[in-house]
Structures are given as C-alpha cells and as structure tokens.
Length: 234
Image (tube, rainbow, N blue to C red; front, side, top):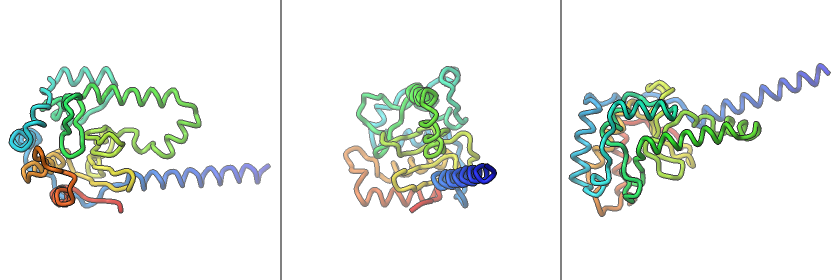
C-alpha cells in the first residue's frame, strides 16, 4: 500500500511538472525588450488615424466611432471582461470595425468591436464551465496559458495580437502569437505595438490594393516590428 501511494505521488508530481513545463514553453516570459515610445498612446493613435486615412481609405471608412468611458465600463461590468487603461483608450479611439465591411484592420488581422469581443469571451467561459471534468483538465493542461488572453487583433484562426491584463508588461503582456510555430513577438507596451502598426502604414505596407502578404511586404513589416518588439520562438 505504501508503494502504491508513493507511486501515485511520483506520477502525479511528474505529470504536474510536465504540464507546468509545457505551459511555460507555450507562453514564455519576455526578456530584454526595447524601450517603449515616448509619445502617449493618444498621440500615437491620432497619428495612426491620419496614416490609415491616407493609405487605406477603405479601412478608415470601416472604423467605428469611439465609445464613451461609461459605455466601456458598462461592457466590462456586464460581460466580466478586464481591460487595461491603454485598451480603454483604444476603444475610445475607435470601437473596432463594422463586422460586415469585409475590411481587415491591417494585413489579415481584424479589429473587433468591444461588445462583440466581450460576448465571445463570455461564451468561451460558459462553455468551459459546462465542460466535463476531463475536458476541463485537458483545457488547463494544454490551453490554460491562454485563459486570460484578450483577442486584440485576431486573424480568425487562433493566431494574432493579444493582451494579457494579468501579466506584468515587462514579462510579456502585449504580444503577437503564431501558435502553429510556437513563436512570439513581445512588446514592452501597447503603445509600442500601435507605433509599429502606424509605421507599417506609413511605409505603405497596408495600402489599398497592395498585397500585404507578399514576401517583400512581410519582410518590411517584420523589420519595422523588430524595432519595437522582442522575438521568441523558432
């Protein structure tokens, strides 16, 4: 009986260690990130506004009006979503894009209205709450590291740009994740990410009618983001 108990403890400990190691590898901690820009988020967003209007009028026309502070607070309260101050500034700037516009925010990435985003997050939480114990165990083992991620600019296939309000910005709270490759770009701040997007617009990468998925566009985009972010992964 003693050996059985010891064996169970050893197996449980090894399993826990394996899962913990997998989760650390699946969502690593960022290190040695560049300094964030000196401009405020509001300044960066104003600049981005003008650059989108200049380079992609179709995208600019699809952007929704910003939300008021009370509207943002009401959505957070109703759906139990937690935003950072910078994210509140984002939705005060523009509340995403019209879902039926057929336009992306940049490249293949979407900018979803806050209430739609909050409803999706609530539905996922409810689905997890209604899952069996075995299903929840598998979720926490293999997807639990994504629990607090907010889909900032998703691509519709599980990859994209995310914010984790529960993680310290110095450890990688704002990031890009390409799940299939296990690769990340960590930004020291939300303003760093928005500056990179703004610079990409200024470089003409997201111009109307231009193929943002071409090799040359991707290489230029990668170089611009490299000034603002730290890369991790293969």
